[in-house]
Amino acid sequence: MFKNYIMNQVVLPLDLEIKLQRNDIAFSVHDLVEQIPHEAFDSFIRSTGCPAYHPRMMMKIILCAYSQSVFSGRKIEALLGDSVRMMWLAQGHEPSYRTINRFRVCPEVKALLRECFVQFRCHLVKEKHIDDEAIFIDGTKLEANANKFTFVWRKSVEKYSAGLIEKSNQLYDELVEKEIIPEIERESPEVLSTKDLAKVVGKLENTVDELTTTIESSKDVSERKQLRSVRKMPKQILKQFKDFVARKQKYEQDMATFGTRNSYSKTDCDATFMRMKDDYMKNGQLKAGYNVQIASEGQYALAYDVFPNPTDTRTFIPFLNTIEKHFFKLPKYIVADAGYGSEENYEDVFENRTSTPLITYNMYRKEKTKSAQKNEFNTANWKYDEETDSFTCPNDQRLTFRHLSHKTDRNGFTREFKVYECESCTGCPFRSKCTKAKEGNHRKLLLNEKWEQQKEKIRTLLSDEKTGEIYGRRKIDVEPVFGFLKANLGFTRFSVRSKERVQNEMGFALMAVNLRKLTARNAT
Image (cartoon, rainbow, N blue to C red):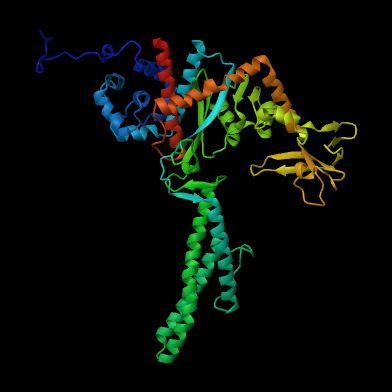
């Protein structure tokens, strides 16, 4: 016998909710989005035009689709006709892929996503899934939706811009010297600006037009031939200066696009070329991408941001500002790896925040090794005399304090160093091992007292049993989030362009990771 199966039999409509399992991820998505306050959707209200799909419904179907590793607008549209959970969340609505794509890159969605993370964290704290004692910060690089051969490099632009300045100055001086055009009022005596170049083009056009008029009015063949030869040079230079104006404008636009970066992609101008971990060719190939920063606890992503610069050191302070402004108050401890350890970052947390940094620095592990502690040429092992403010080198020569030195990096942060210099390195048998200074120069030692004090604080914190245990949880807390995002969810490349849109997509992807983890936890 078989169960009754008749295709043309009338079947009464069913509530799709009963077709879902009790712990289906659709319920987690529904509960999360329903917790968003009604006021958060006020910016979506329009008084004219066709009534729009409700943003709650749009949020639900996109989050649910991302949790199923579906990131394409067309595939999300297809799911609305195939997936029971998507049908239930949409309640019969079937927005097109264009509507879905427009919604997920809408600027107002950023605030909704942040509200989702705030509500999700409140739920975790309420259910005691996290203890709200520390956050674990780390970053990863994700490939942008950009062609890998559309790079523009700052050094190349600077090189060609310098060549243009030199060539334009040379041609301008030649024009003035031969009295082809009169001298113009320049904004700068060294560089012809875009306005200056435009003035030169105008003067040359007038000169060429006058010569052309004279040629056309003359009936003497020899005279016309002579005038054409006179017109040839300014006509050629006019063409060059028109090219200079276009190139100058392009270089200025390129420099404005760079900002503080060294490169950008023509397809996505906010993306920067950086090294990715998944280097399949093993040749250090650079790809256009973004540096994604997250703050986690309990293997849940609680806050996120996207940066175009590849180094984590420079993302730390702006990321903390983003967390405090849009997500939550910073907890007692901020935990991160050595990539975030710098004098500027330590200073910011110690002096401007109410939290404690549990962040190592680059040489932390090396300093703890026996070889480093026994190395007599390591300046950290040299004897220091507080009364005379001097160090003693392995050759028993004193390095005395000479002067203070200040160094400012390209980000504008200034460090203060005390400079010590050896009394005499002449005839020292350890000279080649101790210093690379040229003959006649003595060994110098630069001491950053503030940096040394900060490192001592960090060493003390990490040697404590409680704080050391918190730092030890870093790898098993934040790293699995990236592993789940890339390996399990399959999110390895953005499908939208520009930083603002990428931030929205990152929010959907990370919340999908959170919802999958929470659903799996509730099912056990």
